[in-house]
Length: 130
Image (tube, rainbow, N blue to C red; front, side, top):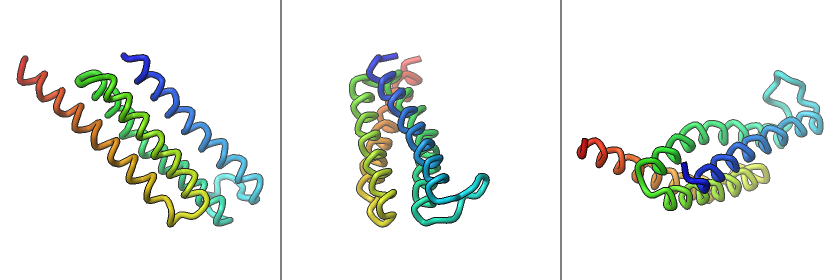
């Protein structure tokens, strides 16, 4: 595996961890006791950021690894870094105002789509050559 892809993977795990810690801190700040997932609107936005980031990462990480294994690792790492930028923007904007999360979502979606195309093309090419 490319060290750049490994770095993007590590940064993705750190992003997920940061979202988890933000939710934990928000539970204390807004008095939302576990296992509740509703209460103060600011807590609910942070909780949704965490869940959405975890959900998106389940698709992103395998797409990154497949694109890196069956395509150009440098391009895969670049698209992965772009996805991370989009997710951070998404998280920051969603935490402030849920209606402003669109740009970060769009950046992440475009980067994920590029990884899927790259990985899919590489896999199809490898299968045809086999």
